[in-house]
Amino acid sequence: MAAEYVMSSFVKKIEDMISSKPALGEKYGEFFYGKMIDKEIELADISPGDKVAHLGCGPFPFTAFELAERGWEVTAVDFDEEALNKARDLSQDYGFDGRINFIQGLCQKIDYSCFDAVWVSYNVRPGRECLARIAETIGESGKIIYRQPRGWLKYFDDRIDAEKLFSESDSDRTGRNGHPGDDIQWRSLSVKQKVGKKSVLIEMSADNSDDREEEVLRLEELPEDCSCRVCSVPDNNLLAPLGVRAGKKLRLKTREKFSGPLVVESEDRKVAVPKKLAQNIEVTYDARAE
Image (tube, rainbow, N blue to C red):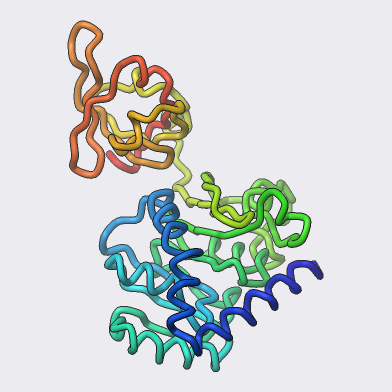
């Protein structure tokens, strides 16, 4: 726990300093945030018009800026009034006035029911209570994007592991004691980031009795005109340009004859996936997309 507070204080001091030096802040944001948020958007598969929150925006709200620049209307949250005032001023300077709503609050006290996705900054604490509160209030199909250490950084920063938290099986998990409730259905995906970090997606899901929703199968086995979500793909350079990657929603349109490719729809774009590759792409049936 001490390591977590040391790292949080260190990051806060850096971002306080660069908030008064916009040129330096832009370089810092470009290095640490631009590609990271691209990966997170791809992982979370958020849609145009989704309502997005960013917790722990700080004095230079890089994540909120990046999301607003890509077209989302963002609510940026921080408990530090001074940091919020600096963030508001920078938002106006960069032309985001009206696209980012800044509010002061504690992450573990906010009602997240009006949001489709919530970004939790690396510096946010208490992480356990914050994640539990989001999970309890965000509702079905809500998404949490949580940044946490991986690899070598875990030895210096022992903050909560989101996937481990949601996997715990305590009988009294009510949300009030820092655990998500027992009735919460969820799944997770993650992507590696720079400097010993990773971004974890925790996605809420409805309690659905349809067994097909949880069944893992091969894309090649999916019935025609059915939707799915990709769980894993083989290491093949052909797939990324087709938009076939872990976390993506697909709809199988048809199969070409004589061992031809499978035609799938991804984001209103039809692409052909070779049958040999489709046999090694794991998916889950996605009843919510029907």
